[in-house]
Length: 331
Image 1: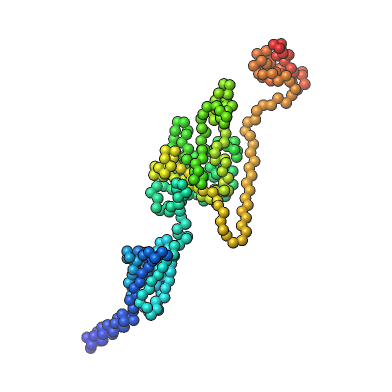
Image 2 (image 1 turned 90 degrees about the vertical axis):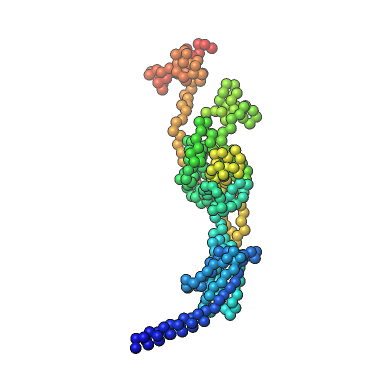
């Protein structure tokens, strides 16, 4: 009796399997891009099941599915497409590029845009929102903590103070290891250039003005002050020898590529408004002579017994000081 029961069960399972196999249909097809070129490695999945396959090097596929089921075609960088299996056994599909996944590009040399994963060197990209959300007047100051391996040094002096940027800890005794700055494909200078006195490099702090303006010891601004942070669209930091090779020896300390915002076609009227304000106080102010006095040079006054401002301390005099007349004896 048991053997008869087992034989009946085996026969029933065989019949059910045969019916299921008979109900499925084999679908073949080809997946191409918008230009008609084959797309290999595209996943073809029967929706709602684990049944699936992928296209070969020629973009073709073969899969057995239930009639009326839905096939889902997907691949990295391409849009997902679903097709219902009908009476035909051949399904050809054309996929379009997915703008969301292909937008992760960086700007390299001469405005060339490439995908980050296609580059063989380290790249850090900072968006306009990250630069402007802190409200810094200098985009160099806005880089604090935004990029790994980037050292930012800001000199005192407020909005007009100079900013020094070093990539990957490159050091130099002359402190001349700033990266190369490229704005919309144009190289700009951010370091202080030494040079002889001339029409554009004149009146320095030397004897008879022999030193150029760049040779003085004062803290002055640099080229980055000319760039409005609100005008920056993308800010890309290229690191390593492979990245600097695109620009030659000038990029030995790295490259910072800046692209500014351009006009874009869009529906409706779009207005962006932002404001940032700073209030600062000088730590040290020069001593000013606010009382009437001769105003002779300090050397003449001190050599004749007066102070540097030609005054003599006298408790009986108004204000505690009076003119030191000996300072006039030499004239």
